[in-house]
Every structure is written in structure tokens, then in C-alpha cells.
Length: 195
Image (cartoon, rainbow, N blue to C red; front, side, top):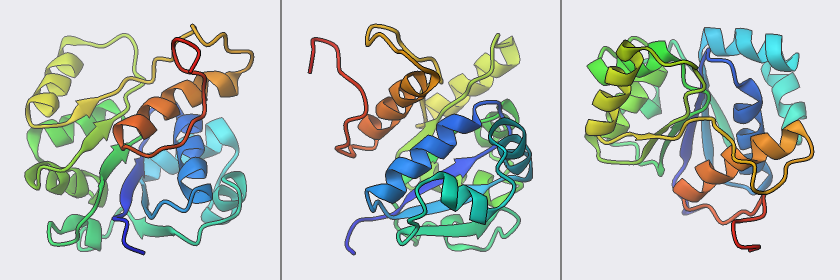
């Protein structure tokens, strides 16, 4: 397959359904995906979605992972940690404020943080999906630093003009915006103007 993989990281910010739905769309549309989940991300998946392991996550995302590779977040020597491993960019969804801080300051304590650092240094697309609210001045400054370094901040803040009827519609609104930024042509929600 000639398409470059998208790195998808799930960290410990509330909003696990966004990450699960994004993974489902990527997997079911055969988009090559490198999946990284932090220990806090796993805790969040358990608490918000009842998902405790790869097997349950695979089932929750449609069961088809032919194009998904899972990496251990503690393995800082894995492929996503190297700039020579070409990717289509990275999405951290949801993205905790601790992860934002590490990215903004280049501390790279985990594979997720190192992969984000690599994506920035290689000038690839890094999409951060924070859900935190309200934001402190520290959060805002870290988000600004990450943006100045080249990241795109895409808050998990769904719109309502598409008249959502259920929670999934709100989740899909945010996931659609992420897919658009990745230039992946999948339509989940009605666009403004009736498209």
C-alpha cells in the first residue's frame, strides 16, 4: 500500500469516544494507522467506553484492523519515534493538557510525545484535539507554543448547525473536522449549506 500511515494517539483527557470513532473510521476505510495509547488513555477508554484491551477496542471499531499497527507507548525506539519513518502526520485525540505541555516544551517522555516531536521537526501535520474546559493561562500558553511550533489545535467542540440528534452526531462532527484536516475524503456529517 502506497499511502503513508496516520499516527493516532489516545491520551488521558476526557473524550475517549472521539478517539474510538476516529479509529473506527480510519480502520473501516483502510487508512494505514499507527495506534499509540498512553496508560492514562487506557484508563480513560475503560472509564468512558468500557474498553480495557486491544481486543475490545478492535471489536468497538468494527473488527477490521488490517491497516492498523499498535505500538507500546513505552517503546521510545519504535518507528513513530524516527523522522526517517515517513508518515502522513499525527492526531492526538483526545489530547491531555499534560501531553500538550510535553509537546510544547519538547520533553518527549513517551513514544506519543516523541512521535509528536518528530512530526513537528519533520514539518508534518500534527493535530491536537484537546477537550479540557475551562483553559488556564498555562494551558493557553502551551497551546500557543505548540501552534507556533507547527501544530494545529482542533478543540473537541462540536457545532450544532447540523441539528444533532444523538451523542454520536456530536462526536462525528469533531471527527469529520479531523478527517478534513488529514485530507481523508470520508463524509460523516452534513456540511454547512446542505452539502
